Image (spheres, rainbow over the protein chains, first blue to last red):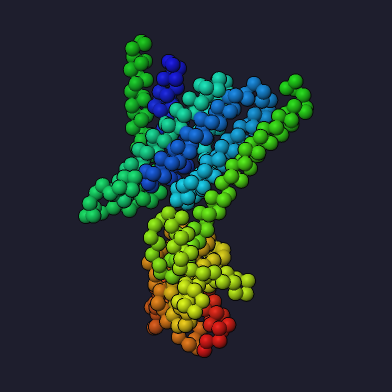
Length: 206
Length: 199
């Protein structure tokens, strides 16, 4: 139980895949213009990371070391295709809005990173939890960026109007550069916090 | 055991077989649903060509509305959609295709039953630049084609402003795509009218 807590703290905050490890940036920039897109993308990533970590951990002792990357990519891509088929069949609008980015989940470094760094060495259940935690960390950052972008760019949140019609949308927020600014600010802010904490730790040790 | 030559090959084949089977099964079990959604999507586009507002986004309801109003007829191996039935046809939607800037553009153009007016246009597939040529998908552009009169013995049905007699505005920053669309429409309307011996 203590370990689970620790994993969540690392995945969501200290070792957050986006602002801690700077992974998964490409898709974080691409799908964050609307909160709903970000949420679905995040859920897709949580699903893929958790299940691929679980599977890879499950078969880790049978996998020959020198072909493990091949096996990992195969497993990850299978889960990505499952997400893609599922969205196409039951959420066609979402599938259209996310377009090629669903398929590109496979190139998201977070999944491969967790597989190599964690699932390879830990038991299946803990790996599953770790996948969920990392996916949540990613989703959280995506939602933070899209919150600002959708609110200022469209005046809505999850499609519901927040600002009245007199509100002038900030066109720049809808465009790709806005994601760069916002992501940089989040990384900056998070690093200031994390550094302060570390310094305090060092001081108390001394 | 793990050092052997055959083991990795067998292992990889086994994993591949398991996942291929899983994906094939999923693909097979959702194929019908995906096809139904794709056909509802096309039906929505045909309804748009005829300027019939879709009552609901629900694929089932679109399917129902479509079947009430529209009949399908094969002419020279091409599916042509008819608004109304038998003697009571109000308009046709012809499939057309031609070269765009980056790839082929497929569309349906709607022509009234007496071949005097353009009813509408809708693009089925294209690979134009998103944000520039891709804006042919936007309603303001497509709606300009509604109600254009097809004057006899002339092969320029669509004319972009600022030319005299202009009836459609081109897309700023997408001149070549706009021209492609114009040419596709002009050439195909010419062909359709010729086949029908309308002069």
